[in-house]
Length: 167
Image 1: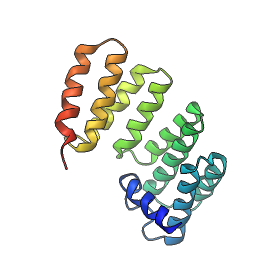
Image 2: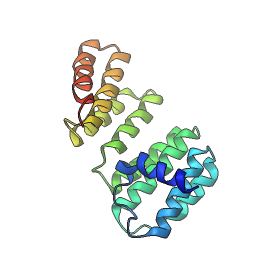
Image 3: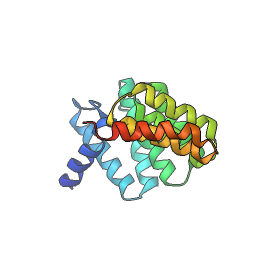
Image 4: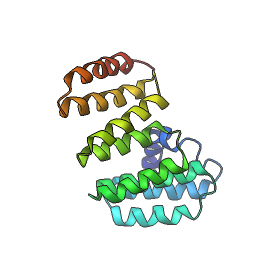
């Protein structure tokens, strides 16, 4: 199981940041909840994330737990509930571009296009000229293209390609 935890730590490093780095027991509980989520055990994972909220002491920690609660709910098929938790994550830590991007993807799945566009734009503004922004530009371009605005989509796709190769 330790190998899985190490893989999750690497995969989610940008999301988790320094949250819980001085709290090894809570860190292990977070990794366990993420493992449950990754194994599609959504109900069990949600309960573990919910218990972790009581252990949070910083806005960053709350943001991380709420974000994973949102991912968990979304992958379990609960878009509206997930949206609430993405918004809670942003309320606690409005500096993470990935929170806005995932909220935008949630809106997109629910065909709420204007809101999706706004969230992708915020994600881009928080992480401009980075490799991660290539994903945000691509999502924005796909949304514009999907709703019939290819002339607005093209610059987004060009920026996505431009930033994709950055390290």
